[in-house]
Image (cartoon, rainbow, N blue to C red; front, side, top):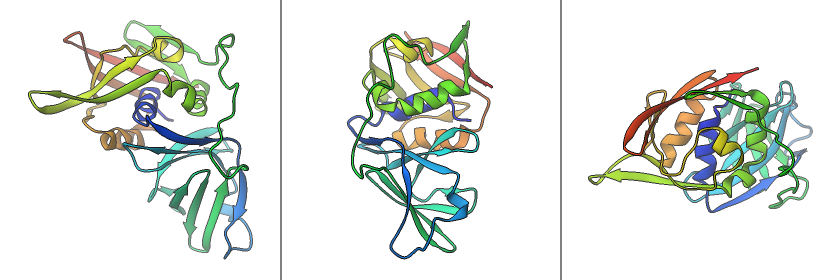
Length: 234
C-alpha cells in the first residue's frame, strides 16, 4: 500500500495548503442519471491544494479501507479518470459520462479531534534503522494530514548550485514523525533509487511506490549517509 515516508513528504510540501477533509456523499453531475457502479466503492476523504503540487484528492476504497492520493489525469482501475478537482469535490470521467463525489459541506472543512494527545493512534516498531509500520497507521496518517502538516516543513536542498535532495527544515519532534525516524536537518536523496529533487518527483515516487511493501530511503544526516528501511505489515 502507500509508503509512510513518501506520504509525510507529500504532506509537508503542501504548506501553505487549503484542505477539505471529511466524510463525503456521492452525487451526480447535471448530465448523469445515477452514480456509476464502477465508483460505488470509492469514498472522498479530502482534497488538497498546495503551492508546490497540482491539486490532489484522497480517495478511500471501501472494500479494503485503503486511502490513496491522486492528481488530475490519473486513472483508477483503468475505468475512471480524475477529470477535475475542486475544493471539497472530485469529478470522474468514464465511458458513460461524468460523476462526482462531494464533501457534505461543499467547502473547506477540517474535522477536529482526530488526533488526541492522550491517544496514540499509530504503531511503529524500530529495529535499528528499520521501521515496521502497520497499514492502519498509514491510513491514519492520511486522515490526519492537517495535524501532521503542522509539525514539519521541507524544501529542496542545493549543494554547489545543484539540487541533490529534499531537506527537513523544520520539525516538531513529537508523535508519529519522531517515531518514523524523521529528524530536522535530514536531507532525503532518494526513495528506492528514485531521486527526490523537486515536489513533482516526490509525488511521482509516491505513485510508483505506493503498492510496495518495503522501501529504502537514502538520506544524509549530519554529513553522513544513512539508509532507513520501512516495511508495511498487515
